Length: 503
Ligand SMILES: Cc1ncc(COP(=O)(O)O)c(C=O)c1O
Image 1 (cartoon, helix red, strand yellow):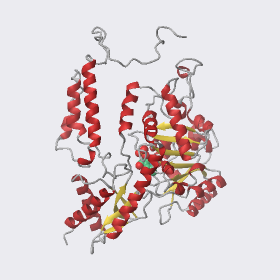
Image 2 (tube, rainbow, N blue to C red):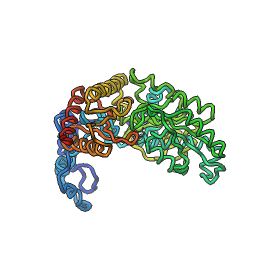
Image 3 (spheres, rainbow, N blue to C red):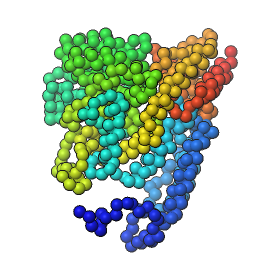
Image 4 (cartoon, rainbow, N blue to C red):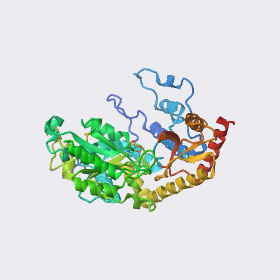
């Protein structure tokens, strides 16, 4: 029914000159024009900041005592918005983590996009709560989830949920696995109802967030069997089969195997198809931690390695890694929608769904995860994917893989550098080496190189330890990296290495 409240179909975006009502205080600006000018300035500064990122150091230390800037007590009185912004420029903007820079390759992070940042602003402007309800943001999230199902090859009937990142996505997926496979009503009885110890299997290269998930699920770390890997850091299938057989014989109850598509250390991809076969044979849930690699289904030079991804019962993936959506953006997908819903849905009276109005609408996302109030993170994914198209993301990933191999050839060309593992996806593990240095000395020298690389603002790799050996680790989930950035990395490592080891 239309009336004077819902008549206008188009939003009026032209500025109003009406003065705020002084008697009824709100948090809106006292002077909208002043705020508009500040907003324009912020936008200009932000775009220039991104445009010129390569001209700045990848990282710089904050000056001594900088933390004093953050010691003041709760601000009880207002500060003019311009001054708040100046403080941001002075004390915060100049000291980023660095992961928007072309030579940032630490841990595993995406580099963000301009559209992603703008979309986050728009989403905060709408401030929609996407726990549920009948409004456009829920449709956007549903569409993004459908796109991601299509991307990884899960059927239309599968369910999904956007979450903060793969840690949460793994927790949600593993919760569904536990509840479905336990054989009793875990929600009703808790693990007190378990006649047998429930067991989860993953390779020794599994990301630590899965251990956290297993602990949070009340299973305990002892229930996470870490299976040995082959020389290429992939799950050893015969060791997996043996562990399951032995556990059953000992009266334990295997429930789930976690495969990883892109391990954090070396980017290895577990044999997903073999794990899927084994899970069918053993009647186990197959969960994939695809935080790094699942989205690489878009890359022509990778997707074959991911064969079997679509056979998972649940998949955790990240959009804030190789898809460069600004933090936070992860997703969990579950093949059996009913099992997913059964693991989380609780509908108290105050959340009852209606046939009409705001409380109507499609299924509520809060029925598929832990959180009730949820941000409109779908918008930055939706706008980014539309702006660039999925194929461009695939090309960016394929280029990162080529860059990893280019770096590999540079390393192999230098006698002072040593490749420490096969290059998995876009991850290169290597170290500086020099004649006559033992393992402890090599560790010291490589730590020194890493510290200097970041402190001098040259590049930001990270490190790992493989087979007891400390190595530098370069993870190239970066759409801004160019070939010459890797030339710089290698020549600077050689320079820093020879300075640290003048012999
Ligand atoms: C394989 C893997 N799984 C899970 C995670 C955790 O993801 P997030 O940091 O998005 O929670 C990471 C993070 O790097 C990862 O590499």
